Length: 112
Image (tube, rainbow, N blue to C red; front, side):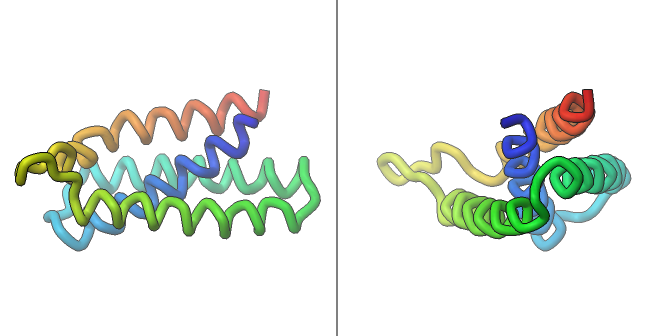
């Protein structure tokens, strides 16, 4: 179960980082986070390919990719109450270090 959670969080991070790259100026902290998540992603996919039949991680990855894209698109469009945005991409960008930590932690835990 942790494998699927880590895989979903990876795709969510990937989509948020892609939007960040287009909208914001890249910085060294973001580059460091991207490297940590990329190494964790290799670990997650390696675990999935070793422990499961190879087709399952591919199918689940495709589904999670679409789910993450839809979630980020919904946030980009905005959630408004009385004309004021309640939750925007700027709040999501502030949570990226926490998401990076969660992905790295989960990728380490699934190997134990």
